[in-house]
Length: 248
Image (cartoon, rainbow, N blue to C red):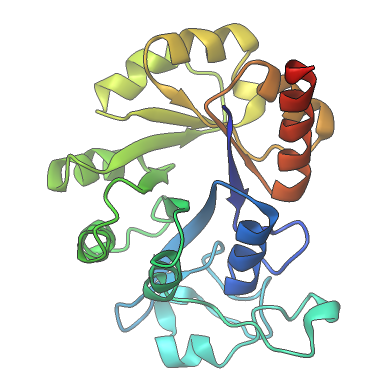
C-alpha cells in the first residue's frame, strides 16, 4: 500500500508547518507528515521551511538570527485569513514529537541545511529522536547529501533519503552508496520504469510534491512506496477508491 505523507502537514488547506496542519493531516487519515527543521539563534530546533520568516509569518529576518522567543511571537498563519481567529505559531520539533507520542504517524524530517550549514543540526535532531525512541518512525531527508551520510554515521538506525530535482542514473545505486534506504525525487525526475526498478532493489521511492489527481493515481497504480502531498485528504480518498475497486 502506498503511504500518504502530508507535505508540511495538510498545507494545501492549512498554514504550512504548523501544529494545525499536522493535526489536520492526522484527522484526514494520513499515514505520516513531512516537515522542515532549522536552528534558531539560540540553538533550538524549529519547524519552518524558508530560511527567513518573511513569506509565512508577519515578521521578517533569517531563522538563524532570531531566538525561539522571537519566533514564537510571530503569527505563522498570517497569510491564511480564515485562520485569523487563533494565531498559529512556529512549532519546535519537541512540540511535534510530544504530539506524535499520542499517535502512530511516520515523520519525514527534512534538514534545511543545504544553503545554511547549521552546525550541530544533525546531532540535535538525532538526540531528540532517540529521547522519544522514534528511530523507527523517522525518515531524515535533505538536499545536502553529505549531511545524510553524517546522520548515518551518527545513528545507523535512522532511515535517510536524498532529495533531488533532476534525473539521476540508477538512483537505487546512488542511494545505496550513501547508505540511504529511500529516495525523495521530484516527480519529473523518475519514470514509471525507474520507480519500479528502484523499489525492486529494495529502495523506497517517495516523490514530492504530488498534488494533481492524475499524478496521485499514477503513483498509486504503481504501488509506489509513498507520496508526499499538500492534500492528504484527496490522496487518501483516491487510495480508498482504488482499494474499493479491487475488492469488487
